Length: 239
Ligand SMILES: Nc1ncnc2c1ncn2[C@@H]1O[C@H](COP(=O)(O)OP(=O)(O)OP(=O)(O)O)[C@@H](O)[C@H]1O
Ligand SMILES: [Mg+2]
Image 1 (tube, rainbow, N blue to C red):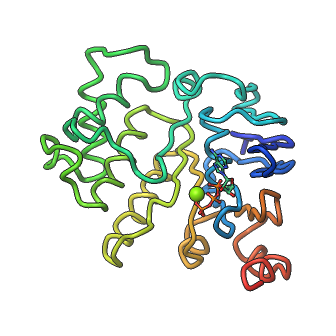
Image 2 (image 1 turned 30 degrees about the horizontal axis):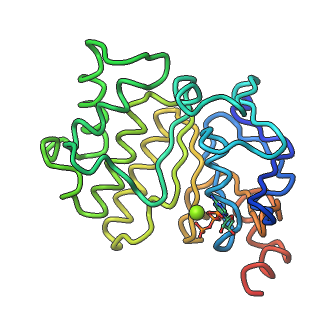
């Protein structure tokens, strides 16, 4: 196992507010790494820093030993980190296929459209089970299909790390089970995944490692079992 991603003393301040404070952790290759914490804990902010949409106030992010904090989001995506957005935001007026094609054109080691782009887009749509909806306009999809679309767009970039921000929120029981199976298949492909999730049962079942954020700081890290039995974690959730 090698270290895929490392965050060192990450801090993000918005005016007076510390959205992240001195957060340090490592993600091992192939892990399904859960990030949990109450609302406003800094989870999405952490993903935004990793994907490059937000610059940390201080601290660094390393991807496969290379410093990536400070690089533009497009550079970081080409290196092999892709994410879904919270809330989902497809290009509403483009077709499902076109949305995924965008990912295929600007992914890992890629610079714009090539003869393989359409094939990559079709493969990603097939993988998430949206092939039959390829010609639909993105805004006409159901909420669950939009989540699949986001995941397909990320997968089309051929990432080594995928960031999944609350891909299960607002779904029915059946839809949740389906997306969970999809997340497992993503891991089976050898992709390292980071997952922000509120439903503890899901975190317990899926994740190898869990990071708990609270008021922007790292409260705990360990196996799901370890963090769930941690008195400080219990206090943060009940308190
Ligand atoms: N662009 C911004 N400008 C100012 N404050 C922000 C900005 N983005 C986030 N914040 C604040 O930073 C804190 C952390 O927000 P963040 O979205 O990272 O939390 P979260 O853990 O993802 O919460 P949730 O579970 O509700 O998605 C919150 O207090 C939020 O209001
Ligand atoms: Mg969030």
